[in-house]
Image (cartoon, rainbow, N blue to C red; front, side, top):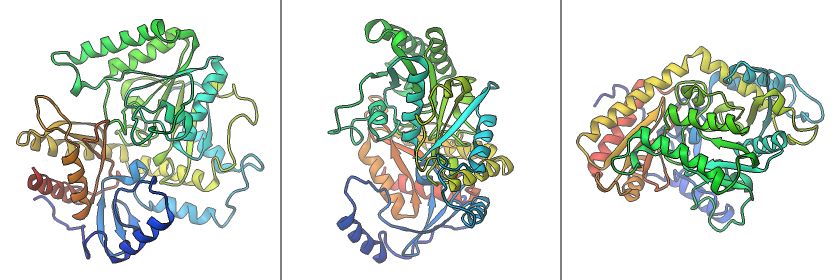
Amino acid sequence: MSTTTKTIELKTSIPGPKAQALLERRANNVPVGVSNNVPSFAAKGNGAILEDVDGNVYIDLAGAIGTQNTGHCPPKVVEALTEQIQKYLHPGFNVMMYEPYIELAEKLNEITPGSHAKKTFFLNSGAEAVENAVKIARKYTGRKAILSFDRAFHGRTLLAMSLTSKVKPYKFGFGPFAPDTYKVRYPYYYRAPFGVSQEELDANLLHQLEDFFKSEVPAEEIAAIIMEPVQGEGGFIVPSKTFVQGVKRICEQHGILFIADEIQTGFGRTGKMFAIEHFDVVPDLMTMSKSIAAGLPLSAVTGRAEIMDAAAPGEIGGTYGGSPLGCVAGLKVIETIEEDQLLDRANVIGEKIISRFNSLKETYDVIGDVRGLGAMCAVELVKDPQTKEPDKDLTNKLVAECQKQGVIVLSAGLYGNVLRFLSPLVITDDQLDEALDTIESIFKKLV
């Protein structure tokens, strides 16, 4: 065991008595369709640590599904918010504008990939950003069709849900879906057909994309292709630079816009400010949310100025889009990432996680694949290393037992058999080591 300072503190079984009382109130007042991972309730958070209402202290490796890259209650954000709420809460940018909106737009135009002129506007959620990016792409190109990828996740609203690939729990029973949305294939190298190399799979999938224009929808009717540079809910699948650049090249050949969905991958998660930078591709439009404002509801669409200006006044935006609180938080999040060198820290975290599970993989053949980019890491569990049959049951048991022992971790993947790690980038080495030691001990016990 490498832990030197103990963080996890469990005063009760989980859920504790206060949490149990709240769970009963939740059952009586909140729909079952709103899912929850940990059967308890937060009382306070700091950095990578969460404490629940019964005093149990957890190490958080989920980060509110990637919204806490700068940690729970980052000091600079809290200070900026405290100052802002004394001034004004929400004059409504559509009514009377305010400077933080302009400041954050300027900053995102500066730090997103590409040296071309850009413009940015703000919304509330990732799904809203996706829907508005599609609106802009359609308006600019005069085309209707949108392509997304298998295993993609882009949100739960009608259009975003239509672009999403996983049927249960996101789409089942909620149709009909938005028209003119189509799926094409995204590489999954671990599950490639036997004997097919990464290079061969990339070439085959890019060829299939070109064939799609002949068999399904002509290229001249496609407004945009939207891509997660690393698939999130799909299982943290990392494509090759060849594949991503190939998709961008096809887009350019046919006048199709390339939308990078950076909602989960952005703001330092992968060791660069935005994951698309790993692939040397400059998107036409980019969607952002989650860690943009340390968990406050905020999302953004940034894109080439001439594309963004295709929409006329009133055609994009929203009542709460770009709230002053979200904008001042966003500015401080970026400042924190830059000043505290969290991009470098993301790579250190990722190396620790990947190294630990690669070591375990040598002993336990239920670990089928260990993968990631920066601190966006995943472990895929299988029943058999040859057949690669997914082991969802083991994954669920691991997640549940981790919670009981004070480590919050999530599952993901089309088959529900992937452990995903989204720890705050401010997690200390001691905290990360303790969490990994705990997971390793649970893993050994269950396997």
